[in-house]
Length: 67
Image 1 (tube, helix red, strand yellow):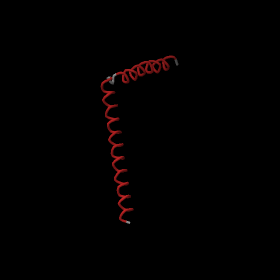
Image 2 (spheres, helix red, strand yellow):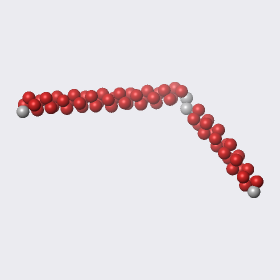
Image 3 (tube, one colour):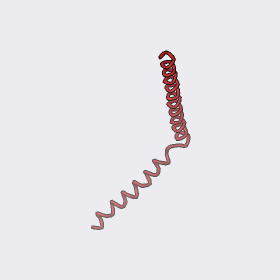
Image 4 (cartoon, one colour):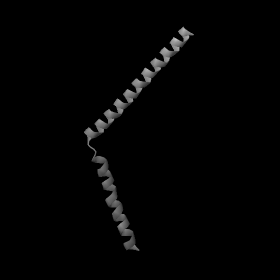
């Protein structure tokens, strides 16, 4: 019974540090780049939303004027 339990313990010991290493291996510069890309994308989306809002308002004003 003791033999059956030992390999499981060893496997756990091996897998945990690998996971930690995998998390560490992503360099800071890459993290920053991905963050910058995300923010740029969000900004672009916000800009598009604003443009669409302006267009909608302009259309509404034209409709009211032309009645």
